[in-house]
Amino acid sequence: MDKSTIVCRCEEITVEDIASAVSQGAETFDDVKRLTRCGMGLCQAKTCRIVISELIAEMKAKSAADISVPRLRMPLRPVPIGVLAANTASGSFVRSTLAEAEPDEGQEK
Amino acid sequence: MSREYETVIIGGGVIGSGIAYHLSESKSDGILVIDKNFPLSGSSGSTQAWVWVHTKTPSWYGEFSMYSSELYGYLHRKIGDIEFIRTGGICPFFSENEREHAKSLAESQAQVGIEIQVLDRDEVLAREPALSDKVLGATYSRIDGNVNPMRLVEQYMKAAKINGVTYEYYNKVTDIEKKQGSFLVTTEKGLFTCKNLVLSAGVWTHEVGKMLGLDIPVHPVRGQVMITEPLAPFMKYTLDGLRQASNGEVLIGYSREEAGFDRSTSLDFIGSTANFALALVPDLAKAKIVRSFSGLRVMPKDEFPILGPIPGIENLYIAAMHSGITLSPLAGTLISELITEGETSIPIERYSITRFA
Image (cartoon, rainbow over all chains, first blue to last red; front, side, top):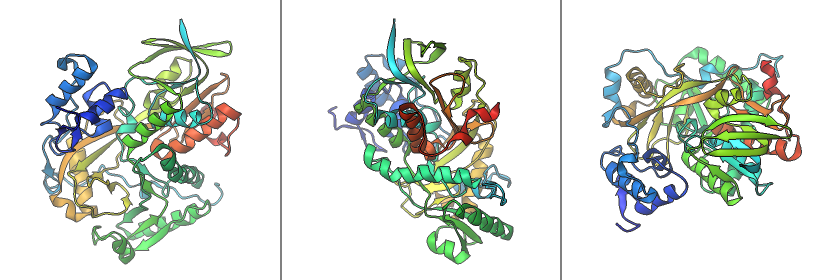
């Protein structure tokens, strides 16, 4: 691999991008992920996890086994919103900042 | 042996790094930021990252948020590309009684210069055609927008380091001792002494405060967000609860849960958020959710920022607040002013920790 080799195909992240994150102080897969977006794309690191963990380990002079795996995110594989909604009773967790806003009542200023 | 710094900042998230950067603009060295992990691993990296003003109430808090938002255009030019976009913010509503509420919000915020238009159905659909045709109207303000929180914190850190700031990563503070004219900060990797100490540890500020015998009333409030695959650009505005990022992903969800430090995501939330997304933007039905995450809001007891000096302990400062993305340019500016000049350019007494005494 040279520095322009793409190691995360979903987000087109190169070896050089990973090296740049590590040089800034990133130590874990998730640290590198947040700086570069590697593993944040459609495959959710299923393709790039091992190769990137090995790269980080090499750059940090550690064993790949010491690089913790990235945090797995539900729903693990892409699922259409319509499917997620259809299986759920109505009622909502979701709030609205407009509904929460409390306009001044004159005296308060 | 301890290493000496003029100022130590505990916590390198958007608030701590924002303070480090702003302070480094006037003081070129002697600044250390200590983070127990790597910045962005906590609240700053798990957010929809709206730069949001128009529904922030009371109006004095809206005004405070507006000042910070106004600093973004300038910040963008100083620290580099942070993908800040002033999209304008839209809060759609679906019932007539909300229209009256929207009008009174617009009136109240106008007193401090926050311009809000109350749009009727046709006007909001003309602006954002992807919205459900069941919408009855919306509040709209040009002042709102969003930013890439990863780029923001990274650029704060890079700019701060260029100005001479030192960072300690993966180094937890374990004890703090107030000495005559200085603080002794004990960490897992060594001792540091400093004249000024800033507590900006986000949801961990309470824990850090205890080391100084303080009971800082801040606790975590969880929010969950889900994210679609990248979609062709079809939405322009930052909506109440939903926005499309510049890479095409749509970020969905605004929730508040008391869950301690638990950062799991839950199926009931995902289902509920999916319902919300479809009610707001029906075309999203076929869009696939790629992932979801939760973040912990930094919630002071009365929900307003805790910002300023901590009376009774000389040269000790605190900056703890939710909406840290919106407020970081202003919080960074104000704490820097306090440290370098001893006073701030706008009054911040309202945000003093003394209100909880």
